[in-house]
Structure formats: C-alpha cells, structure tokens
Image 1 (cartoon, rainbow, N blue to C red):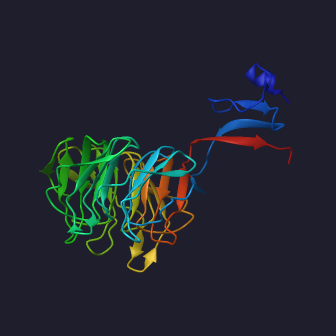
Image 2 (cartoon, one colour):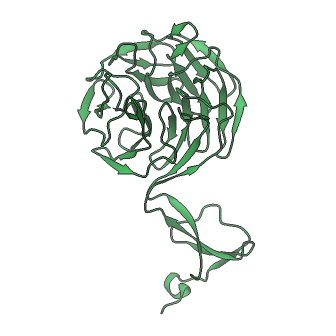
Length: 321
C-alpha cells in the first residue's frame, strides 16, 4: 500500500494547533491533542446547538450570517430587545426604538433594517435602520402589516413582500430613504419565507390563510411562479440567495409545528435534515450551507441552531477503530 508521502509528495505535518485555512484533503498531526486530523467535506446537512438568546421570543427579526448575526424584536411578551451573535453567544445591545413583533428584516449584523410588524399601537409601518450601534427611525412602509417577509443586502437596499391582516401580495422596494410600491406577488399570503436581495429574491410558503407551498422568484421587476416547496407551511424561516436558498421550520397546519428543512438549487426543493426543535415564528440568517436559526414558539423561545450544509468543510479526527 502506498504511503501518504508517496501519494501526496510530503509527510503529514506536525502542528501545535489546527491550521487556520486548511484545504480539503489536507491531513495533519495535532501535537497538542495527540491526534491525526484532516479536512473533509460534509456529505449531508445537519443542525447543531448554538448559544441561546438572552430573551426568548417568537415573531423575531434577524440579519447577518451564522457567525455574525443580529436578533431584534419579537414577542412573549412583545419586546424591543436587540442581541448580537459572535458565533458562540448572544450579547444584548441597544434596543429598537419601538417594541414590535412579526416584523420584516434585511441586512447584516452592522447594517440592518427592521420594518412593519405589530407594535403596542397596532399594525405598524415603522422602519428602523441599524448602524452597528443603534437604531434610527426612517420613512415608513406605505402599507402597515405584520408577518411580512423581507430580504436585502444591507440597510440601504431591501424588499418587503406579503403580510397581513388581510393576506396581501404587496411588494415594496427600499432605496435607503423611502419605500416604493412595485409589482405584487402572484399569490397573496402572509408568514412566508424569503431569501435573496432587492433585485433577485425568492418567496416561499405562507398562508392565504390556507397553508401554501407556492414559491415565486423576483427579477427586480416582477414575480414568477416556480417549483413548490416539498412541505407547505407558514410562519417559515428562510435564508440564502435566489438560486441557493434554505427553508426551515414553520407550521404545516394550524396545530402542527415542523422542523422540516429544504434546500433550493435554483430549480427545485430537496428535503434535508430537520431542525432539532420543530417550531414556528423563528427567523434565519446566513447561506444555504452555513445558516443560523433562532427564536420560535417553543418555550423558552431562545433556541439557536447552526446549520452546516452538504459539501461544507469539516475537520475530522482519525482513529484506529
């Protein structure tokens, strides 16, 4: 049998700690842990437990990535609490100006947008912008609504679509200053999931009020129906891009919460590994392969789960068994 050196042209490196940027197939000996390790690619997606939110809640807003996320608003009871995630734990930061739940969201950990929702005054049109330190109130949505979906790269470029009290297909585009009404969804609905950007978005699931599996793609001008979710649901969370999205959680009927996770490849949805805790009213951020799910209706509502999708880098430890 050929040795590692004969195959790869080098001996296995001896390192005091794991390399910062290993490549797939690289193998090394960790002299601190006294084990042989290597970098492989995951063969299936899986959820793992992350650090719990300080304030448990559902109907929560979120922005950012798996290792740099922002959580804001929510209910049980209604709150303005905002928290920042560093990949390990959540830290409380400055609150929203107005407590609200079931709001739309977009952006990053340092440049986020929260809009609509339900506040102490009722259905809201409020829009607030986060600059990494504090929230600032800006121009309102044209139509007050809750359970509205949102996508966008940062606090200057976003899309809001769907919502209730009466299920709507209304879509509005944000340019950093004001909202403009654009073409509606083909299927009116609320509590739907979203992924993508202001000009290339995906809308999926929701309620009409009957549970929907409808998926629509946005090209910056209009919505087009594409292939449905495998499991219809509302109060569903989502993240990723128009061509590589992730949908997870939700309700498949008025009395049933699910942990179903599905991946979108730009053409169709594929069932993947379920959330550890089935729930609805959660939110999600990140990509199809590295996502974060947090909050939800299941007590205490502080659950955070980290998703590693198929094909993601994975450090493995070799044993002689």
